[in-house]
Image (cartoon, rainbow, N blue to C red; front, side, top):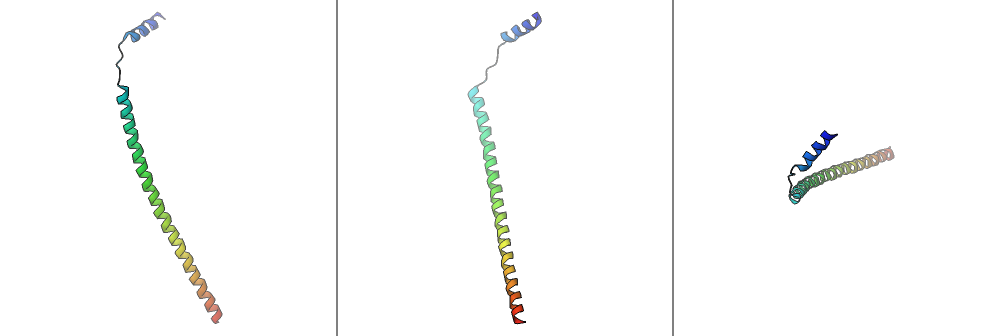
Length: 82
């Protein structure tokens, strides 16, 4: 155990380099802001893609329904004419 105590005393007597906490914090916050901004832009882009995609889907569905209505109307007319 004496060896461990000597190692511990040697470690305690060493001088520790101090870092600037404010500078480190600012660096981390700046990096975090950049990541957040990139994610926000990407999510807005994906959101607009979904809006466009759903808009086209709704338009196609509406056009299909209109075509079905016209086909049914033509079938009714042809049945009445017979």
